[in-house]
Amino acid sequence: MAIIGRESWADITMPMAQVSSRHALVEPAGAGRYRFVDLGSSNGVYINGERVSEGLASIHDDVRLGSAPFDWNVNIAKLQAEERGPRGLTVGREPGNDVVISDQRVSARHARVVPQGSSLLIRDLGSSNGILVNGRPVATAVVSKGDSVFFGSMPIDLFGLLAARGAIGAIPPAAAPPRPQEPQPVSQHPLPHVPVAPADRKPRNSANSRTWLVAAAVVVAVLVGGGLAFVFATRQEVIKKCENCGTELFRREAYFYNASDVRREADQQRWCSKCANEMIPVKKCEKCGEDIMGRRADVMGNTAAGEAAKQQKWCAKCGDEPVTYYRRELCQFCKRVIREVAMSAPRKTEPKDVEVQAGYCSSACRLQATAEETGKGVKDTVDNLLNKLTR
Image 1 (cartoon, rainbow, N blue to C red):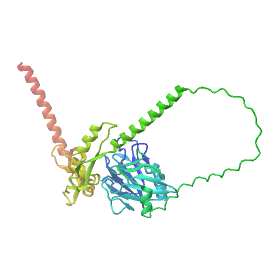
Image 2: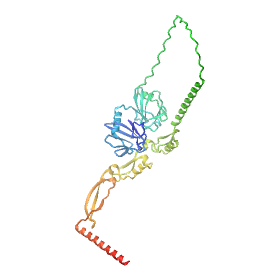
Image 3: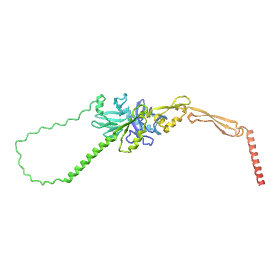
Image 4: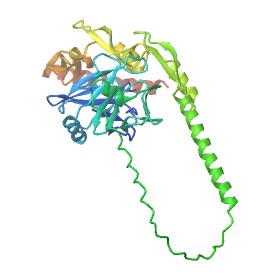
């Protein structure tokens, strides 16, 4: 399982403008195939030219993120390493996960957790509210016992949760501190007295003490301010419900960046991530009558991709089906068909018959055409002479 995105923290980085920061999830599906899942990207995931929210592909299929091709030759080693490695446990809200957490702040398929000795490897599976480890949003992180883990704004005790469900064994407790040694009996023989010269006692530097106090106060202020900022940055509120399934949509109150743009984008959201990426019928194919599908957010949101889907006349199968059209060569004089050639092209290109003038069908037509051209030339010459004489 690997996250594909534009940023450097992604497992597979594709630094193209058409690739979103967290674009898609890819994981082994067995038999040499891999499952690609769209994580709510702007430009979508395409397998063999068809946009999908989730689909299977092999190294022989054409996979594109937006218009950027997925390079199998470069990324196959990472995917095969993922396939050989441990799959771990999935954590989410839906019953199909290994560990189920019934909370609206947890996505249907939120994260994957892989035990690694006394620690856990956690990976975000494209959740809506993200994962915070020690106050920092992460896509992949190694978590030790005692680390702070949040799914959105919900605190999660992964070690206790997985141990309670029997997913992992209990983490061994920390080693006990060494037992202090018993004091040795003092010798009964007195030590000889050695006179020591009194040392000069240096006065305490009050300036250094004040510097340390100021530095400690600054550190405490930074920690307190950071904690308050983290609380406000991760606070969420319900703004509306999904128009399709009724799931509550959250808006994160952020103060470290342009919050007005974030709020405006959240207020314009109409569906949850699952419903927005769901494929819905747009119209019927004019040939076979099957539904032409489109992404809900594109079709009902009147985006360019949605308008393109509404203008389609045929489904993918009928659009690629070859149709026959004719190229006809006509006589320049009598317009009779000299030769007709049958040609084929995909139906989606809407081919039409073509007529071109290509010589004469017989010598008679050639002579008549020459005579007409000669007579026209003589007539034009006579007309020019008459015009000059009448001036």
